[in-house]
Image (cartoon, rainbow, N blue to C red; front, side, top):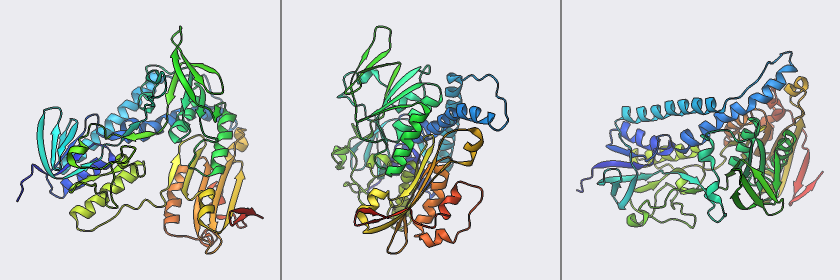
Length: 463
C-alpha cells in the first residue's frame, strides 16, 4: 500500500478550503492546509466581510439626514477614512484568528506558504522548497479581479483588492464595470462623499438580474447623485501633471479623477499552480473543470469554490466543501445543489433575489403570471426621502408555482434568505396567499399581492 504524508492536503485557506480541512481533521484524518496570504480568503479578507462593513459606514450620511424627519437634531458630522480602515482591519484579523483556531482545534496542520502541484499526489511548499504527498488533494484557491491588461494605463488603476486600504479617500473616482462589485463600490464611495462615476459597456447595469431591479436601482443611484454611463467604456488611463488620472472614454470624453477602479469580473487563481503536472484540465477561462461531485480530471484531486467558476459565492464554496466531506469520507455521495441560490446586491437600496428573472422565466415557461408592487417605504414618509421599493413574484400559470422573487429596497438581502427556503420547498402562489402578513412591514407585500399585474403568454405580455 502506498504511504502518503497526509490523508488530505488543502491548497487555499478561504471559506471552502478551511471548511473541508477542518471537517476532515475533526474526523481524525491527517490534514494539512496551505495559504500564501491570509486565512479567510477573499470573503473575509478582501471581499464580502469588509465590503459589508464599508456599506454600513457609507449609509450613515443618509441616516443622519433621515433622523431630522423623526425629530432628531444632528450636530456637526465628520468622517475619518483612516479610522474605518483600522476598524475593518481589526475585525478581519479577529475573524482570521477564528479560522486558524478552528483548524488548529480540529488537528489540522496550518502552513503559511504557497503550495504548487508537482504530480497527481505531490505538492511543493514554496516557502521551504519541501515536497509532500497526499492521498487526496483539494484545490480551493479562489480567484482574483481581472487586471484588464489590454487597457492602456491599467497599472494606474485599483481593483476591489486595493479599495479597502487606500491611504486616503479620493475626492473623485471612476469605476469601470456593471456587475455587483462595481455597483456596490459605487454606492460605498458615493455614500462616503466621493464624487462617483460608473461606466459600463452594457445597456443596463447588473446584466444577470431582473430588468425591473436593474432599472429601479439605476434610477435610485442617479437620484442620489451617482453618474452612470452605460454603453461606454474606458479606452486609456494616463497620469496628469498634478498627479490625478485622466480616464479617456469612448463616448464621454476625458474624465479627470483621483482614482480609477476596475471591476470587470474575476478569474480563477490557477496560473502557476502546477495543474498540468497533475493532469488537471481547465477551461478557456482557466477554471478547473470538475464533475458533479467536484472531482477534477486527475484521480484523487478535487476543486471547490471560485476556482471552478461555477457559482462565485462564499456559501456555495462552503456547501461544496461539505458535499466533498460527505462523498469522500462519509460514504454518502452528495452532489452540490446549485439550483435556486438566493443572493443579494448590497447596493443602496439593496437587491434581494432568488429564482428566475422575468426574462429567463419567459424563455422557460409558456405562460406566466407576474405580480408587481411599487411603493414608498414607511420610513420615507417622515424622512422625506424620495425612494421606492419594488417587489416582484414570477409565477407559472400552469401550476401556480413561484419560480422567482425579486426585491429592491431596504433589507432586501435579509428577505431573500428566507425566500430562498420558500422557493426551495416548492411553494406556490396559493401558499403565499394563505400566509398572514406581518404589519406594518415592507415584506407583507409579498403575501398581499392577490391579483397578477400582468400575464405573459408565449413570450408576449398580455393584460
